[in-house]
Image (cartoon, rainbow, N blue to C red; front, side, top):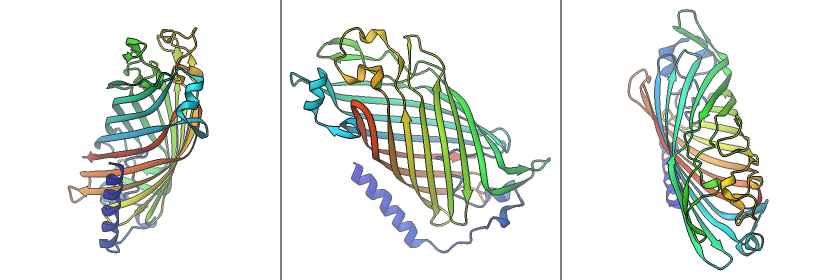
Length: 361
């Protein structure tokens, strides 16, 4: 499956590059003074729908994203360890985990500087385990995750006239973001294990945080003739503990993205992302913390880590009107970690794909 998807994306990208004609790309001076409709007609793929961005006033976008992540190596620090080594420390060790996410994201332009977005995820998770006795078993969970609401504001680089008809765009723009997540994802998922039936599943198999979380971010955009560069910071901080007496760790991301316009309809992007996530605060008493945990995934003090990912993405644009205000964007992305450091005897990410599209009108 992975090779098929990579091959598909590469073939499309090579085909578009080979058949592309040299197109006229507007310079910074060309777009200093334009109406909103003129700006919309430029087909600038640097307005990357995967990164933080602003919509025109009254513009609506609906996006769908599919994500699949594979985890099949046990880590202690930055090194992989064998299942036998993990079983020396715990009665049970995870062997692999697959996580699928379907997400719907509507977004609306409140003003020409302020947009609002909602993110509604649905998860399907499965984790394979092995006991010291050699028994292998699988646990599963699925359902709605935490719903997020985020406001994006153009702090600089977008200047709008009093009548909202003319816009001045700077090559460098700054967008700041803020919002929150609602605890709609379950923290009560249960399953059958060799220890018994209908038992509470460990932390990674739950679908939400159980708390309202503060979401913050800032994105710096830099437009060149054929390149669109961005640097993005994102953070998630839980607000207190949930009903079971714990909160998930803080999570931050730093993303560098370079998008190259192949032609008027397609672009190829490279991405470098650093993620850092902390240990949980408190403990879920239903996991019997007073006894020795049978598996590392039950330990709230073994949840932290960091990871550096590299990714390749292909974007394609279909314009449905002459002004390009109505458009469809499709994309596919493959991501693989080049470094990760995890608390002992937890699963690390092997690879991940994103597929999706958006409709703007």
